[in-house]
Image (cartoon, rainbow, N blue to C red; front, side, top):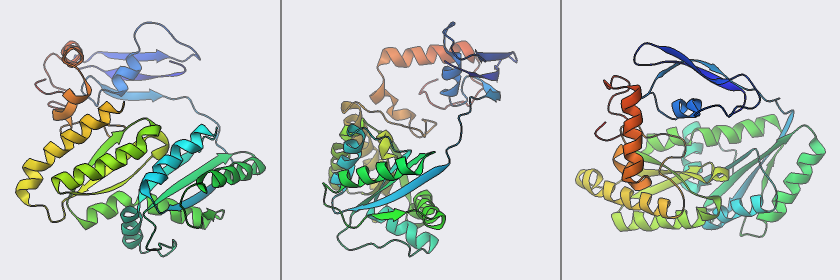
Length: 304
């Protein structure tokens, strides 16, 4: 697993260390990853040993406006297929950026009426000439699509403004309406299809969605906005739509949570991502670590 590990307090009160402080480790089961992914249901992490990497010295940031959200998603995969690996590649639908601009009272980005989505693309490294070369090549790739003028942020102030807008999207959506956020993730090549499916299911079940997220990872946050949906539809009809969406995500080779975890809210959908055999194995693991069910009870697994 490489350098790093955890100090864990088990439900029994025993204290164990996982991993080893070496560059390579293939000894026994990988308990570190098991505990990291357990959402506090198997043990309490009290110490963490991490491997650090050197900080880069330079970065450049591009904001690319698209007249088609599906094309913005397609451009993500095109960038990677061309051999470029941005340090960040974020997707924002128009509403996400517009609501965020209002929320932070920013006028730093032009939003023509025909622009429906943006990609926020960052490249970083230690040599500026390489970054300018990569940024130029990425610009040429996205110009194959129906875009408006690219905003090239090279000052610290511009970069901070753009990242503030991206980071405030969740709060901005929350300030506009009651909402549910789903954390879908698919292979990058499937992002355009995922976005089409999200909008089609929204039309079928009567909800509006505002999408944004870490497109470079294939990770799309789907903020379902209550808007004018009735309380009854929000409570009873929406979960059927979410289940349909998750089934499509899994069909595309994705899964139902890229980074937010399962907790209480998503556990009723775990059967979409895992077979009965897999679910039983997870319940058995929980039983071995925590036979009395005292750690984060009721989370992740149904009937656990």
